[in-house]
Image (spheres, rainbow, N blue to C red):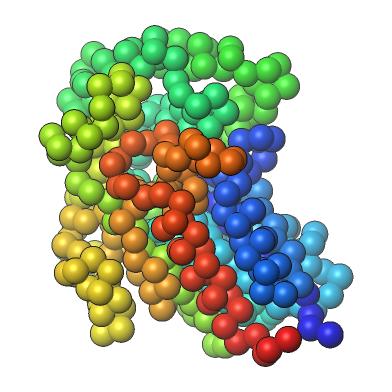
Length: 380
């Protein structure tokens, strides 16, 4: 009888797996469970609860807790699938000699890991983290995390919030005219629509975001350089990556978003963060193997340029190990947050980039991940 497989979905920056019906990996979790069952694989799929913006070391300790709680009863193989920063957590988890807090032993579980898959992960960092280090960036980050949760719960933002935030974003480049009181009012208005129980959970989550932001400097291109120097691949583990590249914002993409005020606001947010992410120093772009380069050229028709990104992470920063898929998608599309409300359960897109990513591409991408996880499994 084959050993049970343990698959862990590791959330990225401000992942909110612990907020009830607000599911970070909801669509990916359901698809992967069904796909593994269809293959006849005895597998447990677990979504990891992580501190949202804590250090990579702390988030890796969160991952260890999830593994210890669910995989300590057997010696079955472990697979780590990390989105965005979650991919870095997974890499540190299996790095030989990695040290977490005192008393936490990684090695018994790390040696059981068979595969590490990263989706849209900033292996060479992202310039957007540099922006979030500033005062305005920190306030905007907290508000954007609340926007994400609100839209996934209610479908879209109230128009009054749309117009007020649109005014804020219009002046964001020079950081003039915005006031902390306006941000506070937006928080209060949005939180008021949640139930009392959910409001407490969201408030606690946002408090965690504000109290511990040690992850942010680690994700800058300069900060990630130290991480890469001290985090090594484990022999025997197979590494694969999913790479995303979205369309640059333009007059055409703004027209394609339509005249709906909500769509225009979210596209404005996308255009703003895309502009920050484009500022990747040429000296920080990683070199790729011939196989990685060939996979990118085959997928995109040409090698992505130095400014290519998914709105959050530079495209060429995302390559690690074997390229399992390279798709036209924004940063959240890869985990199921795109616009397809007719699907059951519906896919909700809070950041309208105009990528055109839909359910068929989503399923093909996650099937490729399943193929990679089970690649060395003997026939049943």
